[in-house]
Length: 151
Image (cartoon, rainbow, N blue to C red; front, side, top):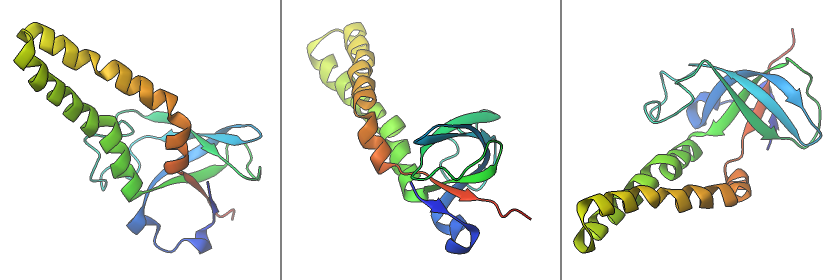
C-alpha cells in the first residue's frame, strides 16, 4: 500500500481506476474506506463485470504503513487498471472457463444433469481456494490511497 499525494501522481486517470471515498474506520494496520457509488464507472471498460457499479455504497479495507488518517477524511482509492482486469479474470472469467470445461468433459462420461451439477459444484473448491489464498491476492492487488488537499 502506498500513500500518495496530489503532487506525486500526475497521470492518475491514465494508469489507475479511482474511486472517491471517506475513511470510516481506522485500526493499527488498516483503514476502512466507504466508497461512493458510480464514481468513474462510466469511463471504466470493466464496468459491466464489476460489482462496484451496482451499489451506492461499498467498503474496502486498505493496509497502511503509517496511521496519518482521520475519520471521515476524503480520499481516493486507487487501483492500477491492469490489476483491475486481472481481478475480473480471477473473479469471473476463469471460473466460467473452469465450469465450461468441467461441463463438456463430464458430459462425455455422465448424464447431462449430473454433468451440470459437477460443473456447478466445481466452483465450491475454486472459491474456497480463493478464500484460503486471500493474503496472496492482497499482496498482488495493492490498493493505494490518495489524500485530498485540505484547503
